[in-house]
Image 1 (cartoon, each protein chain N blue to C red):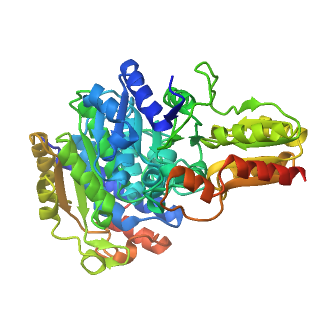
Image 2: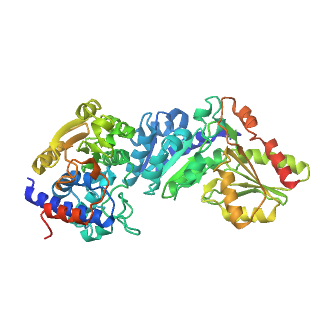
Image 3: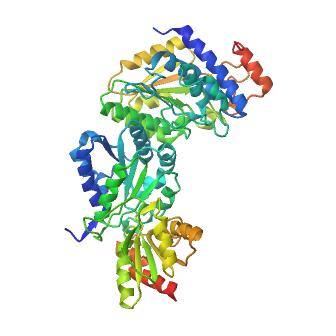
Amino acid sequence: MVNVDEVKKAAQDMRKDIIKAISAAGSGHPGGSLSATDILATLYFYKMNVNPADPDMENRDKFVLSKGHAAPALYAALGRKGYFDVNEMYSLRKIGSVFQGHPDMKKIPGVEMSTGSLGQGFSTAVGMALAGKLDGRKSKVYVLLGDGEIQEGIVWEAAMSAAHYKLDNLVAILDNNGLQIDGRNDDVMQVEPIYEKFESFGWEVMEADGHDIEELAEKLDEADDVEGKPVMIIARTVKGKGVSFMEDEAGWHGKAPNVEETAQAIEELGGEQ
Amino acid sequence: MADKQATRQAYGEVLVELGANNKDLVVMDADLSKSTMTVGFSKAFPERFFNMGIAEQNMYGVAAGLAASGKTVVASTFAMFATGRAFEIIRNSIGYPHLNVKICATHAGVTVGEDGASHQAIEDIALMRTIPGMTVLNPSDGVSARKAVEAAVAMDGPVYVRLGRAAVPIVYDEDMDFEIGKGILVKDGTDVTIVATGIMVNEAIQAAGMLEAEGVSVRIIDIHTIKPIDEEILIKAAKETKGIVTAEEHSVIGGLGSAVAEVTAKNAPAKIKMIGIQDRFGQSGKPNQLMAEYNLTAADIVKACKEILA
């Protein structure tokens, strides 16, 4: 059973890490980091079998952040999990920092793949799942995509191949916040019906409230029982979740909060401990 | 031994041998296994062969994921679609994380023939050598192709291996030394140097024969590794002979000619003539007709050497 309070606490801490790191960097992507926070918290603090003391552990579950611009959320999850001192991530985006604007697997323990160019992380996750099958491993590969990201053609090539090779060890989660840089998905480039698209591509599709830890945990557990096909969990989320003035605002996709905005955001997230 | 063999043929054969010895070797293709010759591996080791369908971008992304999981991955398609269509995936998902993927691409250059310009990659070397950490190999015949593939699989990190469609003359003995990053002094000489790569090494040998008959002493260097390039052998040639003619079945923009000029300009400025495709697209035709049309023959090399010496 998921310890909801523990995951919620981790998520709240991560949200503050994200805001502070992006604020210190003076640039970054708060909106999509905050929409993905509860998903990442549920994966790292409930679902995934990983070991910060042994990041390369043989039978670990793997996570690929295909929407690489949510890097601060991944760094916060890894830091809070104990892969490194979470305070190190305040060097985000600064010259010489390992905390690149988008994740670099060569620089940070626990980062399984370098991502940032949309759609590519999804393909690499298919490769990891394929390798898992080849090696007879029971572990899973989790991959997080943005909803704008699925406008990339490679996503559908990858989706086709994952179903073709019956990769039931692959679980994709869609951070379905409905927004992208230029506005609403519906206006920029229609992505719906997402459910039917993935279903017709041969995936087992589930839906969840992407901010309901219990429901996310439940769907991730259900995904364990799916056989013969990959799983897509469409997580309905709110961009900028947890910070009132960022919520559901496309303008906060790729903008850092100023000093006042940072203070207000931290206050809304429960303040400094 | 056959006196002619396509480099893709040698590649297909050696892949099966490598597969028997390396259980972590995985081969992928994008619906061209009978053309790239990965078909042999697919029959010998079906459990380690993945046909990814006509989706090159995803193939190289999946290759990156397999490599990140400890596999040695060889992924083939035509050079055009590997380096062109999938360029950014190779750059960001294979090159940037420096993963162990061997991009063995066939049907490079205009000798693809009748399929025409859409299928004739003449910019693949240029594209691949701009990626930091990418090793770029361009073997000249069946013997060196086999050794290039062996060396690529043996080393850690991303490698681009350029292979051709057409049967080309065997240039080397089976016991030739192939070392990544080390140019081969095919023939020593003192007047002019021909620096050739890939199937142009054979044209260079023919050209040298014609020139020697006229009393010109020709040095021939095979640069099978475009990156990291053998600077020492090039600087020596720049200093010891009166000039260099580069020869490649590739655009002169960004390929071997450019790579050689970068080395000599910085270290030993030399007179250079570049035999290669002169900022044009390819077209349909027979390989030998296209070699003539794009001035890629031994006679063209002879002419360039004479211009250097004039």
